[in-house]
Length: 534
Image (cartoon, rainbow, N blue to C red; front, side):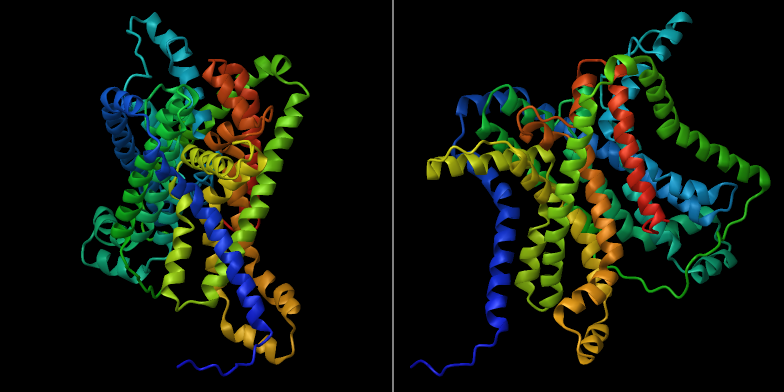
């Protein structure tokens, strides 16, 4: 009944089995914290959950949805509008503003939040000045306007960079044809540019909304209750990991819903262009050109200039009080965590991408690997709760005494959270490698190590650099997972900023903020220097 004929076992089969085991282990690590969240529903405290459902849940849902809607409008207005202007219209300083508009990406949301609070709160100079002329004070912590403004200014670069690339790659002939038929700038924008760039806009908006859903520092500073602040309260105040896990699953469903909407909006559209835009197709009068320059200058002052000036003033006032040798430890901790996370995440991304490229026709494998990148859709605080749940379950099952926090647990959260960030640039570079290049090298007798060092690595270098720098920037300013999972006594610059700003010590928080911004600006400069952003 069975064919027992023996097949010759090639030397590659054991290696394939080993690689398959490594891939299974990686996917298990990536998915286990997320799956663990659902176990909270089997360990729930009915009275505590009922208290949350009756008193806080309606407010959490309405506030979170309002925040997402506001940031959607803000990031679309800023990201799409600014990108279209720098690509399509010539004005003095256009090329400089083209990359300056990316700099707010280095600004953590919680830093911009406490700067705005320090400037506009009751005791801030703006309201104090307005009070002198009889204006009634206002509470900027009331309502959603302030967090929406701050998060829009910080997250619009996600929409901007992808929209700018899409606009620059559109066909000049289609724009010229439309203009010859009497279609003006507004007509070209709505009928040609935006529809053609719709997939890129949807992708950028999806990233911005994921970051909005994940934000903890800014919304907590504004006392704006969202799911992330409630999850932290469930663990920190009530010491209920089950309740925190239950709330985290609600955030997970909301994140998956956003991903589904983004994919549905983006669809399967592909556009083949005959030419690219090398020069802006629209010319305006000198007066309008200088008006545009003034507008972009004013915007950059609002989004970056004024916050940096205020931080510099505060830092100069408190540097002697705040700065001490501990800062070298906090900077070293920040850099060490970032470098370790980069090493682990980029290595895992290279391995995952290589398997995707090697087996493109295995649809089930492609879907499973896509699930492995789902961690980016989860807030850091949700992943922290998932990691703690995994460690708790491990302790109970094996009667172990592993701590629910620690360096390796934190690195696990970073791996799950930022795998998608590293995977995107690496996988796209793998796809750009022509099979004929590899075959030619093999025909010339190149060994596998030589293929890796002389073919793959040079061709993958731009993707590896992009992945490393993006993960480095994200980890250096990551707050919620670091705050919950850090080893005892271990602090980073992000934690120092949050603790000082949460206590209202904005002037002293300016010192670590400038150090962290320096790290972020250095990362963006390196991306510019290596030609990874233009």
